[in-house]
Image 1 (cartoon, rainbow, N blue to C red):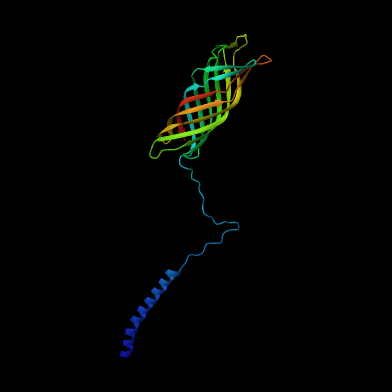
Image 2: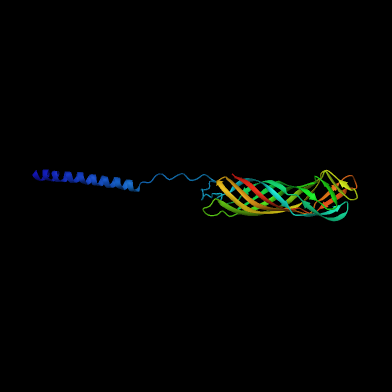
Length: 253
């Protein structure tokens, strides 16, 4: 009887402890190896997403618009025809140039744009000819490329560029006559090939606005002005070559 009681007293706690250990092991095993239910297979035609590709615009890129104006000095030209072939020097007064250029900055270093402007002067003298208020001007339309070199840790940016295109050359004298009393007056025009080169400095006042000062050379091929009535009276002048000091304001977006 004592043996049975003793075995019961000893065996009972052992069984209880063993049961708790076994239950803990099973619980631990279940927590360690239990996984969620796998997702259903993708529908037909479904493509798993691959790596994404993103385009980041270069620093300094975006559209721009520039306004510039300044005084212009004209190289002397030549009167090449006045109702027939002639050769006489043409002397110009100092003039004025202005233009607007709008385009796109591809980055901090290269930009391309379109330019429209006005390049005007007055013919001062042609020896052997009578002149009265003989205005001569060009209306250029150009495609330009500009190269910039921002200075490190500076608000100053040197730039240079060139452009090609055309120009509507306009001759508009009140009176222009030779010694044989051949006379023309009023406005006549001719569209000619034009080119330009420029360089200068820009001063960055804030991230979207700068001012600048620069030099611009502008040239055209020879225009021919035809005055009615038929047969027309032709006046030819050698292409213009001008040198301008331009002050500019540039807006970036």
